[in-house]
Length: 311
Image 1 (cartoon, rainbow, N blue to C red):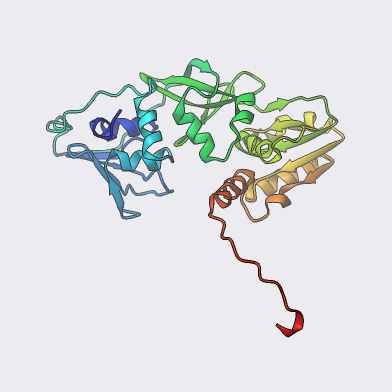
Image 2: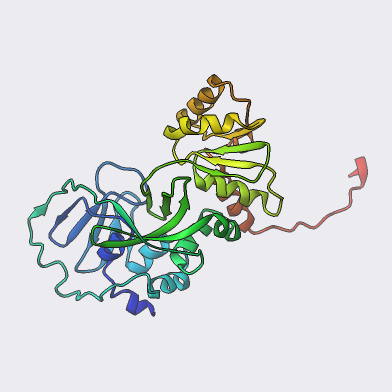
């Protein structure tokens, strides 16, 4: 796919594929809550006729190439590879007539009962460039991710989507993509047993993958419990109590603090391991920061021999 071919893809369709839907439509303008920050008033506008966007919050805008590079956190070459894959089935839009059926009246956002997520296929990680780029943007070692995750293809109503999926002990999946965070039923914790007497307890699977990515080639010496939501902590109590030691990796927020208090009240012999990422909210944030630092250019300085106190 060339850049010119990519520019024929409807930006509205691309956002729909990313679970990003307009709050309302006025004429050709589709207004969204910005996918790049938390906000309550839509400030992200897409003009369907011109096929361009403008983010009033950041003052940035452009065509679908500009948007795609930010959405998928990749360069132009990688973006074209993603858009050209079989995973995105776009119809080139007619820019002269795009959106004319909407009319000039404001279409308000409507509350819609979301259909249940239906998994249509599970694949080994590596075939979907969008999922691969997403995991790389989170600093995750792909070899680690391949061991514990799948590419999950699923349907919501008549729309098809995909995400990185992490299975829980009841057969449900936690789903993550660049702009979607959700899960399939049944929702539950995940328990990874390696036959050890100690266990690491983490809030979410991105932190679990981050911990293993940070350890790199070190041999795993513990079992793992991934809560998949702090609200499911109760389900993990009996499991964690069965270990001689529990290393706890809570987020540095109110929910993480309550999690520590909950385990302490249950008499669990827990070690708060969150000190290793004390300057960050969670393990993944620390991992992403470390990857960013690795990419920074290293400046070389000429070493000049000291002449002692004589200078």
